[in-house]
Length: 282
Image (cartoon, rainbow, N blue to C red):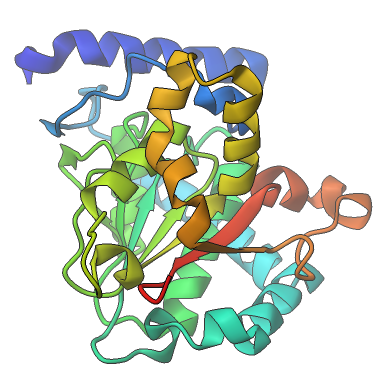
């Protein structure tokens, strides 16, 4: 792993900065700023800390995740979230949620530090509950470059498959795939769209659903920066996809409400989170 040693320095500094400022996930709009942490091609990856965690510390973190999952599952927010998923005509008609013609897969990018902060644990909990609700046969694949050995071990104990390659979001799908990308940088969404952009009918985009930051807000921000900005290039596929994207917000759709759930951490974990579907008919 010495070939990517310099990358670890960037990741470690980011993680320490998060601990110092007590901020779980960056604000969505700030994620449009280009960063050096997202390379153009996938690279091998392993946790930056070499120390193997003890079984006691792994079990303790797993219990904390279970507590967050129970808190989320019993909340009014999650009940509204499921109701939207089951009744919204756009969502319930998508192949991913109809489980046809093939079983769907689920990939999680950018979950954050589940050891340090409650919002990432709630985001991870939503992934677990969604996986169970959809009865997906394959384990959830998950990746974030800031994950530690302890976090990887705890996630694996919960049944996740931790990726050993940083794909930078460049995953071309062959079957229906749900990408859960809570508060990721715009370039991650852009890479995913670029890898699955097909001009022909029935291309890759109609096989994916993205649960993440609002593409509409990214588009508005990009045009506000001016077309000459480098930021436009960082999100050009996000902007290009606006005309073929159906976006359903979990806030306006009856999900998290700031005024009554901010104290529970739900708003911080799920604000600006939207479903994005891409129809080949468009």
